[in-house]
Image (tube, rainbow, N blue to C red; front, top):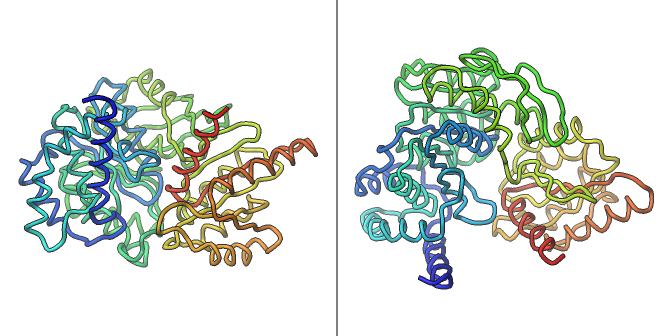
Length: 450
């Protein structure tokens, strides 16, 4: 196939997947994915797995676990969602997105099976279920030494939960997707605890007391060994450093001192500690080689998570899509950066707690430009503007429909501020993973033009 043939066929594959139920439309059941993997010969059981659920920090923790396992010499498969710019990002082998040719070959392998399950079920397989199956098969075909799977939503009935994980990881749990997961933290925790398997290890990040109680009860039910942040492992100390932070971790089986982590925020130090604990219990229940850990963390990236995408002016992109994530972002910005002023470009989804996100960001954002990403779920701009004005005050809020125009306006204003008054004004882009991904694409194209 020529490069054009590959691009055309990949486009066909993506369109076929997107024509399925969107991942935001959920019919909570494992029936369809279970029938599919059964027809495929259960590829997801052909390699050991680590499973990650939680509300915030899932993707970063998954990426850190991947980096640690790869540095230890394992062939790794990583499944994350949602993607920022390309659907290929969701399926990674040895830290790199699956190639277009790899995606096409895997889709061609399972396409007929997707159609077959569609014909047997009341509802067709969704985009997310199909992507899970593609990951299961791609990792089996490679083959990988470990599959590292991030839950899409919840846990118990999430499509990834047909794996039998040796290690389950629960990152901090907060309020999100309440229409599916429940309206209290303990209900949400109960659903997410569904990934904890019998006689496995359960690595539990620091949680609210009612969440911890639910998770510990689940561990007792299935005879899983709990590995708890603050008890079995912890962040001993952290200090700000240029481009990130220096952290020391008390692992389950040993200590790791003065590790450089090129990610910002106390929550990222906790994510690193959780990842180290998970790999310790997965890779032999012993202390990891300190040089390996150091190298894995130095190479860590987490696109769209407090990511500095531009300098002069500084532009930070963060996927903060719920109040819990916005709170972590607020803490990181206020504690680790020294800006005189921040212009926020905020473009959340309408089905999220928009007021909660805005309330968290109000104390660090001096002027807000509210905008829209391209999703059909994007918050209605007039409603978003009214909400923002109620929280920030009308004089601090501007509404610009086009995300690109909003970003250009914010950068121009920041440059003007910095030029006129010799201040340090930055731009912060937040509100949604889709917003983060689209903003990254816009900035990449801006750089290519220059």
